[in-house]
Length: 342
Ligand SMILES: *Cc1c(COP(=O)(O)O)cnc(C)c1O
Image 1 (cartoon, rainbow, N blue to C red):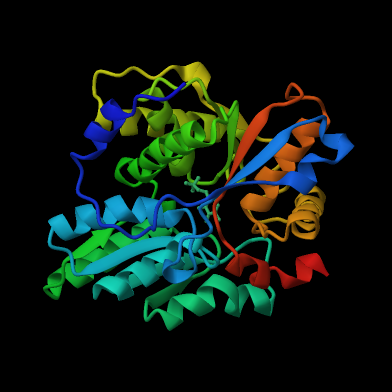
Image 2: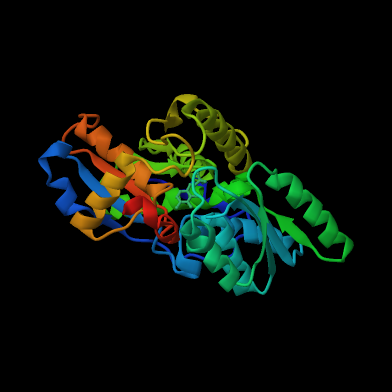
């Protein structure tokens, strides 16, 4: 069995793109974890999108390939974006700007659940300043998008050419990065001879899952995709992911209708709030680290990985299922959350 990726690849080729990721990133089997009886014979694989080298790596680089393509085509000289103080997207935007000789302005908001010094000063926010970005710290509850709009006005009046990216880089253009990743995954699946029943991914601003869904839709694959929402409720995230998938398909193949039942969001792992550690996240992180020597972050990967393990334990997948977990990076977050692990 092999996938016909010509339609997807031709549609992607219409969009400007700057290479930032060494592809393909590896797919590896988690053999020791898969041998534990509690997981009912599931075969766990990981797609190592944490192994992207620029700026410490992570899923935002794939989105930034298309976002930077759009920015350079528009003649931009400054990248502007926003997020939480420990935003991986902000950190990688800063690194990409540095690599391409652009200025970078980051608008970062405080967290309602983490206030200690590690969160305030370590992890991503430490790296933002090393990459030379200008960081604007907003108080809890301030509206970063409104602040960004004001800042863009100021910069424009000074003759600069800012390019604005939304939270997580999850515009339809950004999501194209994960439509491209789908083609990569399906090619690897063919080469390995492993059909993946389900791809599992964390869902924050929804661009990663939307891009994967658009890619699967245009390649005729029967692979399912489950997103674990870590930011919104399941209902909110489902609605956002559907909308972003539709918009991404609109960019790639306007005649393609979205099969709404393909959009699957699980809200059981978020816990109290975005960025609030959960017991299941801590246990899943320790299990993966101690059995496989691999690391997931506390905000995204740890929660989604916990969700996949819980589903496997509960018999949610037939024995012998091949499950592909997308490792999305975010390692600096581990250091910002030091006190959660101790
Ligand atoms: C942003 C991020 C995600 C979620 O991606 P979205 O496209 O925002 O849903 C997952 N993992 C990590 C480490 C991230 O930084």
